[in-house]
Length: 61
Image 1 (cartoon, rainbow, N blue to C red):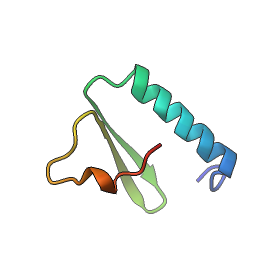
Image 2 (image 1 turned 135 degrees about the vertical axis):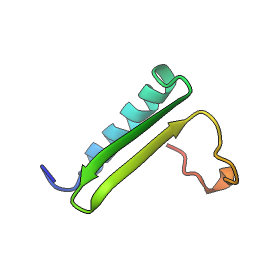
Image 3 (image 1 turned 180 degrees about the horizontal axis):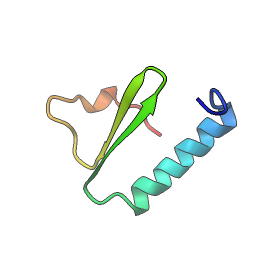
Image 4 (image 1 turned 45 degrees about the vertical axis):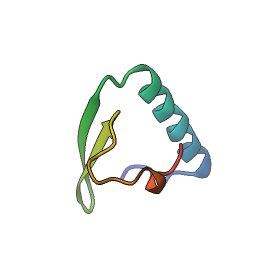
């Protein structure tokens, strides 16, 4: 991957930008896919809790 692993400050920037995106851009859901050296990675952003999910298992941003 270009640039290698994220630094701690980059991870914090990612968290802040994601929170901003979720607050101002996300309507109901987004489904993203990207290629990685280990195969595809899938990202699902949603305003609803997935079925069978336990809210306490999710990390706060």
